[in-house]
Image (tube, rainbow, N blue to C red; front, top):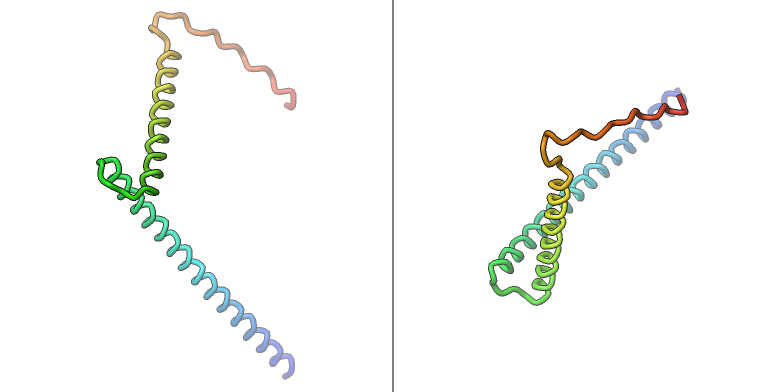
Length: 112
């Protein structure tokens, strides 16, 4: 009988630990979901104030500084996109009649 009591105690302990783990995981998941919601709401707040700034409306000085920084980054992005488009255009062959570049055979892999 002592063996059955030990097995019962072990099973009860295992079940308790499993329930604790499930509860911990559930709470951690809820925390992560709440944090995700906060980040999304903060993003929406930022977008709201940036739209006001872009429309020329009055915003707090600190918000204005952040919005100005966003505008600078947006301008940098546009410049870089234009440079990439220009490079792509320059790399494209001028006409289909242009001689194709010679393709060399790849070297053999020394590890094969």
